[in-house]
Image 1 (cartoon, rainbow, N blue to C red):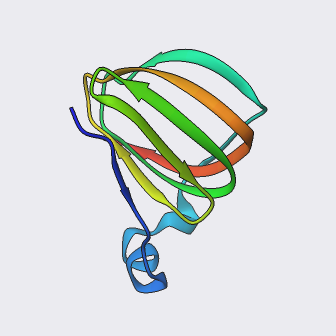
Image 2 (cartoon, rainbow, N blue to C red):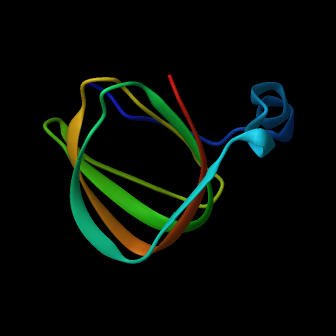
Length: 88
């Protein structure tokens, strides 16, 4: 299960309607997480990494990250994160 990280241009963000997605914020921390459905998020602030069975994936401000349904991982927030997100 692959976590996809990309650096989208403004046109793609507008096309996805990212500005209308809810916002989630979290302070520096570590926690386990399971995705029961796909999540796509756009990182507004901060820096984090997730450890998956396939290895570590790092991302930060300006990245569009897609987590597949069924993924079990460990989040490590290195700098407080603020992100737009959408499920499904």
